[in-house]
Image (cartoon, rainbow, N blue to C red):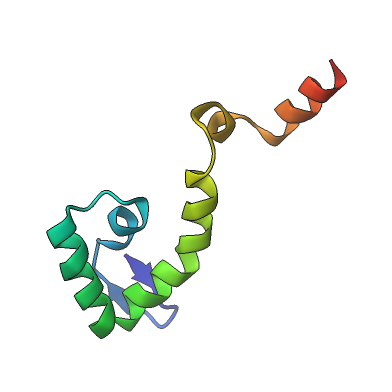
Length: 76
């Protein structure tokens, strides 16, 4: 759900599952059709997409590791 800053909210909840690749193929088609009509979801996907892609590229250990953990590993 997004808040547009103007007091309106979009109650669509498909952006997260869509970006994470968690939708069934038929749901992907339906959500992509929805994106053609819903500017708020389209903007949310555009805004969150790069972050989700970056996180998805990390391994399980890297995703949980704090930024400082890498520094201590390099010093050892």
